[in-house]
Image (cartoon, rainbow, N blue to C red):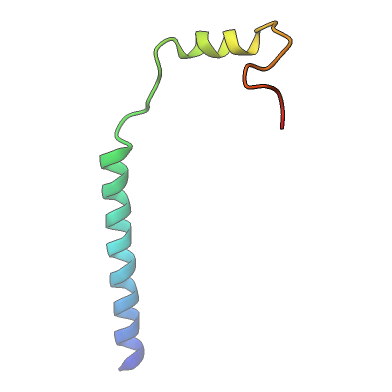
Length: 59
């Protein structure tokens, strides 16, 4: 009897956790966040010919 009860409890906890994770995903991650002119900004950053890093270089 103990094993059956434990199995049922574990399955119930896993199902509740999956339901919570799906709810969180649907609420906070409903659409991708694509910035305006994202590819242009990335290209400008990668192809920038300045010799120094604006943050002051590597640490």
